[in-house]
Image (cartoon, rainbow, N blue to C red; front, top):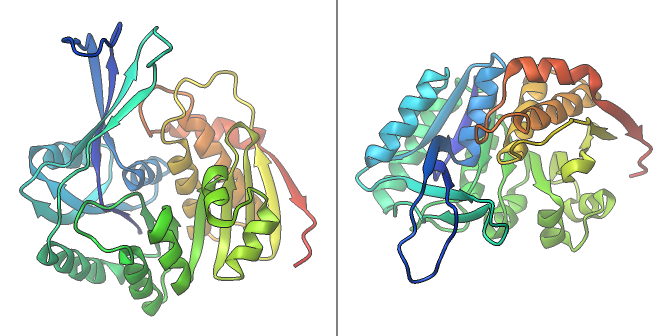
Amino acid sequence: MILNLCPNPSIDSYAWMNNLVAGQSNRISNIKEYPGGKATHIALALAELGTESMLYAFWGGSSGEWIKKECLKKGVYINGIGLKDNNRKCYTFLSENKAFNNTEILEPGPSLNKKNWEDFKQGYVRLIEHTSIICLAGSWPRGISADTYAELIQIGNNFGKRSILDCTGKQLQNALEIGFFGLHLNEHEAMSLCGSANMEDLLKTLNGRVELVALTRGSKGLELFYRGKLITANVKIDEVISPVGSGDCLTAGIAYGVANNFSPSKIATYGVACGAANCLNEDLGMLHLEDVNRLLPQVEVKEIIYEQ
């Protein structure tokens, strides 16, 4: 089973509006809601790929109940800690008015106390022995220290489990002090981490503290470093309907490949196919297996000579 840790799940909404006028009442004409949070998307994609996938999170109020119910419908196992305050909602506004089309408004989510954290950590330890890979992704609610991911990764390391991390800022920097199996980041995140979007510069900064590095470049595809090999992979699609969550689905494809002991090239192929499949439908952060299977043979993969 792959365990997906989502500290700050959300209800993600597409909201249609004709215009947005400051200081006046603005009406949403239509809204569609989806279960959200980076690791939520990963868990949903893994379930669609046919892998046992568990989502471990803080579940807040009626919002948390709705997210759990939607994930259960799609074959994701659910576990975690209940909170009184609601999980957050995140809105993406769609409009013909380009000035605010794709504008996002993100709620902060609930606050956590020390007991919430200790309960969460204890539950995490209980689940680890049944886990092959741990995917940790996204932001944390308020009330948590900047070394929280590092502490959870250390627990995983102590059990001999492989962790794949997708986060930024102090949480990432502190986790790198511990060292872990896999890291997914995009060009902007690489720039923030090491001042460069070049894979070789990134690997020098990481200095062996991560075994697998997935660097995504949007429409330019993926660079994957694993087992001493540097792989580039990309696939062309005719139309991008929604890119939201494509990076999370790519992480799912990589975790799926690692869990099945695929070669570095095949892991990169699955990552790219899953990320692209997400772009082919308007459902936020979701993919369909038939799209993945159709895209897999179309992925262009190349091994780059890399001198360490």
